Length: 64
Image (cartoon, rainbow, N blue to C red; front, side):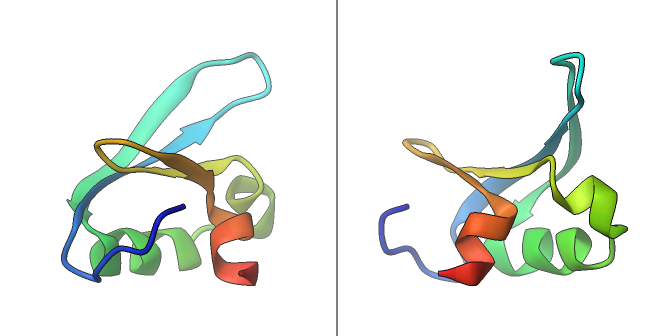
């Protein structure tokens, strides 16, 4: 993911095993990371952060 600020608008969504995407929050990166961190480990595996021009897995993002 490109370098972004904590205030950039993102979508946090969960992609289920059957391919259904469910949005958890539209907000700033800071808000999305807080929501993602509060999810159970098995849910975190399927979380993605989406900006206007990029998508990255939540766990990939936090593991750097």
